[in-house]
Image (cartoon, rainbow, N blue to C red; front, side, top):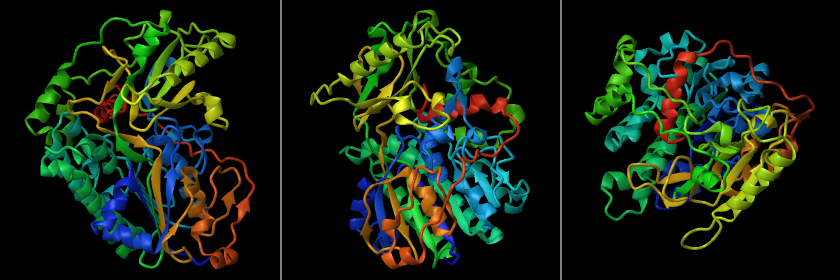
Length: 540
């Protein structure tokens, strides 16, 4: 197969539900042209459809039981929540494999790649990069080569504008950040002459979480009601720019880690566990810290982002960081099960011998409590339609397979579309979405996949694919053998039959290769990263 440049664009949370009608209206010409000369499919995400496991599955070709990334955080077996990082990957991304085959690779803004992975080319780390980090480039000297205007915090969104309800500030920051990311991608590809560029735009996910409500609200302002559509149009322009500069005659692959849709109901799962006699509360949480009060005031005055990005570190550290200690509301001596993670929609049992203060006996009691929780959740009904609120509750060993299944939580809940599990105290066990400035949109399983280039069928609709299929398909585009440990498969139906006959899939038998060893820890940044996840609504 002749070498062709491959442009891979990740759109966090993109969905055909919005893309298709806006393409039909002519509002997204680049997307429409790409689909007309290529193949498309619904891309099924991981369960749950969550950013970390889904993105990592897409570039490793394996399920979370093999790559070991289940959530934004880890450490729950010790009643802790620590942010995951690139050193937690237990399977290598295809970028390293492509590098060994002699291809130069560029990676930009891919989640969970800090500290930066040593690719053959360049890498600019993405989500969960500490805001004060100066070592988020590979190679390290790249930061000096691109200059101060396109490096540092200016390439990443300030999520706290959303947390404090500053919608206009967030939209301005989103537009500016997207333009900078696109501009830098073009510059870096020219500098490194890469064969494969993978860039992720993650602002769409944030936007849809908080602005989805305005799609249907009759009294919404024009700016709010049009925010998501206008950002899809901005992404359409970025797509056109990147294609013209980087892959005019090569392959273009666009995919999302999951889809999106409206949030209708919240299940207060900890109240259910209390009701079922499985969880006992402790004292009220600690009051808000001085740092949090000062930060809230800065954002209310409209200078929060400015201070975050340009205030010297010495002044930022005058006030101590706000502590973020999860599970302080739980009495462990009288708790048998707890809501392990809002982002992962999972429940964990307080198992003796695993958790520090575990009281659930392994074996019969463990299985009995798991079944009791499954039965209770599956009995929940929509207060209006009386339809089930939960599609399925998975035991971890039934959902995942591989050497790292034991790192997963005990039960993973797949709720009905528009239903989300939350923790904390509430007067109700089931409530509508928050009326204050909170989430109005949430993840759905069905993302999108679009591929165009030499040998790809025109205007072709594929059967639904899996997120694990992305990695082997990219390897196929580059003529690289696909290892047999991958759970995904090459999406051969996207290609013309004569092309497949001329370029058969090459499979290679080999063991699962671990991710690279990433030295060092970043204890000082953990509180900041957890705070950012809370600002985004992923942890409580």
